Length: 165
Image 1 (cartoon, rainbow, N blue to C red):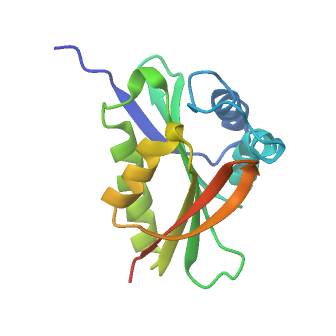
Image 2 (tube, rainbow, N blue to C red):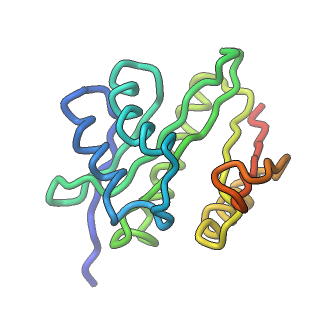
């Protein structure tokens, strides 16, 4: 059996940010590519902001050194131990191979080290997001809210929360 190999790294250098940004905007990352203007700005800027220490950002490379996934979060603006999970996405060809599980392991390890109190995340309510909604539920998150028409008309934002301590 052939097993695809990958390595997860923390994004700390600006030299890696461009490649990570390109992956986020590629057709091999997100299932829903009808991006909002804010999402496009995030995809361009978040990797560089992470390299500058504003976000905690992991990325995975395959055996050829290509970026195949990202996971990004940051402490919320109150800076009292609450974290906001921004994005988790794995290249279409590497799904169901443990990459997302590796990202989760790194994320929870980091959250334990900093003694985070909670983490919040969000998703869209469209069918393309059923997988991520199920992941939130399996990871012990509770759906705590919905903002109607948040992304576009007819696309609600679902807000999830998980208490950590």
